[in-house]
Amino acid sequence: MSDTAGAQSVKSIDALRRGLDVMLAIQRASAVTLQELHRQTGLSKATLLRILKTLQQAGWVERNELEKRYVPTSATGQSGAAAAWRTRLTALAASPRATLQRLVPWPIDLGVRDGTAMLILDTDRPRNGLAVNYRALGFRPPMLLSSLGRCYLAFCPEAERREIVAALARSPNDFDRGARRPDSIRRMVAHARDQGYAARDPTSTSPDSPDRFGAVAVPVRLGEQVVGCLSCAWLPAVKSEREIVSAHLGDLQQAAQSIERRLRQDGLGLPPASA
Image (cartoon, rainbow, N blue to C red; front, top):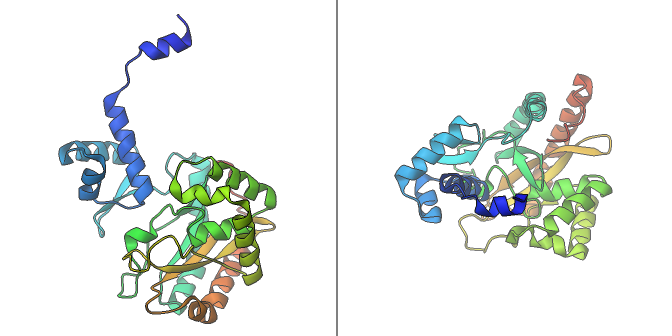
């Protein structure tokens, strides 16, 4: 019997398919409640709880107790070397980030590339009245919509950018569709390089959406390679991008440079290929 015939005769595993559906829903939402998963998947809450417990025990999902939301773990499916590199980067960036957060009354995030998306390495965002919508900010923001992703694309080497854009162009996700417009990508890259920062795509949410927020990001580099990006997010009803840039772009850039110095002194090096 051929491999093809054998594969056609084998039954699929319904429980595995349900688990994958739940994992995909969590990744797409970045942070999601049990009720939201119930509505999105149509699965009973009892079934969802069993799946979520399995995903948590396997290290794919964790529950943020403060927000009561399930989120992908920060190193989902990654090798030990990649996870260790990210942990070390987070530790080296901790002091510059703390200094930056004292200067900036808005949420600050450190993100790294994770395939064709960005990955926020921690979730210690301010919980004051100025904090932007937690769920909207997410933990794995899209490359073409988020300030983190657009910053990475703008400042990474050309060959890497072409590789990412080509992969995004093959993606079935609506939020990756912009990769099929190369002229738009080139304009975004040129604009970000000219400004020294990248801004979140303002068209990704409607003006009256509760998930609407502004964000800008600057690169953290080792030589020509971008190893991460620092972002600041805010509420457009309170501040404009021009005001944020005028007040805090220098702070973001100084923090990025401080992290870069720490990386060089530590000898951490570039991220493993799987990171």
